[in-house]
Image 1 (tube, helix red, strand yellow):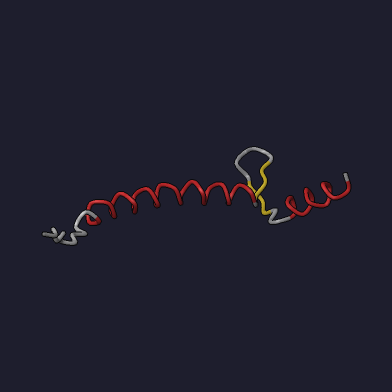
Image 2 (image 1 turned 120 degrees about the horizontal axis):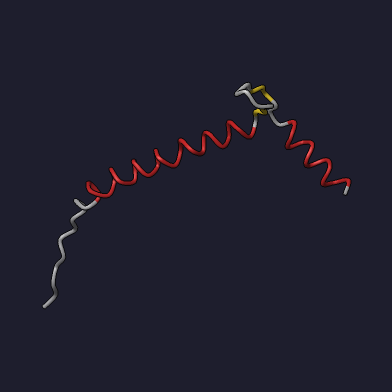
Length: 65
């Protein structure tokens, strides 16, 4: 005598909204980090574009040291 289990995936309807909310709440801070990594400020909330200049500078300084 074997017991046949019925495949029921209705639980995903409860899990998916939570996963979507977690993804959204993680993407927004990540966008902020990326934004601050390519801009510089000297105070007064005035930002200017630096781009990858800092990353290239660090890479070159690391190669020299």
